[in-house]
Image (cartoon, rainbow over all chains, first blue to last red; front, side, top):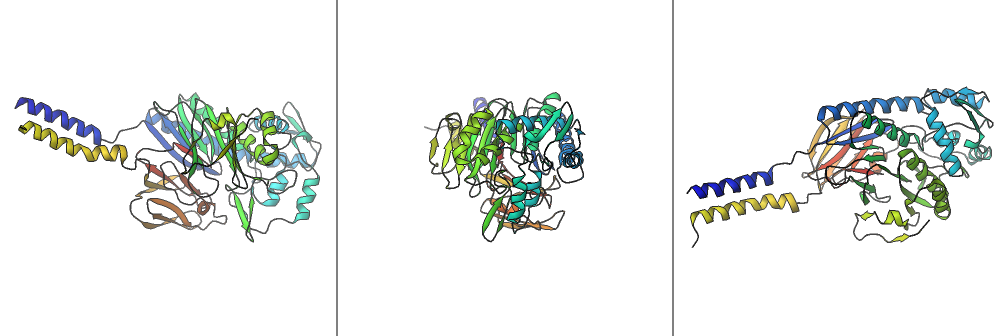
Length: 346
Length: 120
């Protein structure tokens, strides 16, 4: 009879362990800051540390949003005013690294990533939190701004002194600021002792470490239709980021106008509906995904090479999917049947 | 010949089965509940198993969130751009949507998250 008791105890223990909800040392927080939805996931840290770290990150991001906003009254707005007047300005410490990084990436992308087109972005109305409603801007107005060819090459940066040789230059860091903000947020988490985390600021994602004994699993949204198209497991510290025509857009008389403006035409870039890149840091991934989107189906490989990006997936406006070998090897499709992917070296 | 102890073991093993089923096969990656936040603060966590319509008061006005067939979506929103509505149905753990102007956001939480995060 004693042995029965033993059996029963073992079976009960098994029963309990099977049904108990496993407590995971995962802390997740969502914040509405930085003009977007920010998700913070922290694995394996003490709860009080995780809470403290995410509130720090939230405060940091809000500060960056205030400093870098292109059209609210911000240090950047004051700087833009001076640049338009042809004056030399001292770039505030909070903006300087963003300016430096933007100049480098804009040159490397041969202007496909161009944060100097703030006026065009404003003309289209994509600088605000809420989306514009049609009609699209007057073609003449677009043409006038485009012909002035504002670019990062018009800027002369000497230490922290900046001036522009082209009065049409207005800086809008919309295509890099969130990525760069995520990089700073990750640095903050590390400084506070967090080893395993994801920060996803409106689709601008960087992950460090792991989710316990497995890698972090990141979903990539389907550019057409809801849900997830594919997933990628992260390797250590890297950024996975997508630029898509579905993120921010408005429709007017049945036509879609999205937020990724081609500096050459002054209009939303055509030929591509989404570009996903993996890079070491989120600022580079952010700028690169925009640059490749603008470069289009014919030129994206060349732009990727110049930016040193080897992991790319691109969906063109016919729904055809292309990936570099390094990216294709990591994609796991989450739709059935899986789509056809053309694997193409750079 | 089965002893009483054997019967107990068999009974317990059978009792264990449903647990195993739910742990390993029971649509473990399907979202189980949706957490709805206003201004980043959690307002409610609602099961996705029961169809219903939720009315959420945000900064601009009322957002309507529908839950149907194990999925949730924004259906009506007072914002101008309707980006939240364009996001469509969310059903798998880790998927999220937000209406920034109205400061309403939601995330699907599953027993086992299929994705730790989603880029869009």
